[in-house]
Length: 119
Image (cartoon, rainbow, N blue to C red; front, side, top):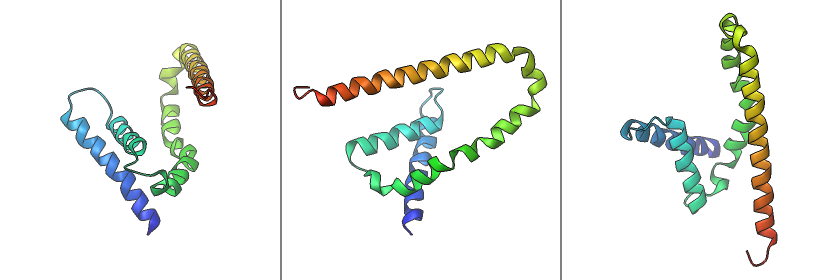
């Protein structure tokens, strides 16, 4: 019963994101709205992490399996992508490096802020 409740909470935020995406005329995916709403609920304390912890851990653990169908679909279009493979891989590598660097720098900044007793 606990898992059903946790899944329903996550689905409710996803549904709210879908509704917002239909109402708000910005080209933002519904999943982003749902994530922002869920993040806001967690940040405000309206929703405790324990309320969705087990289901979230399960979804994160199975995330790799969820990427298999899109990856297989890309193989169907390899003939179209092959001439542009080097630029695509270059952008992927560069953006991955930038995300890692930004994440690392932000983590260091936040950790320094916690260590500072006056901050």
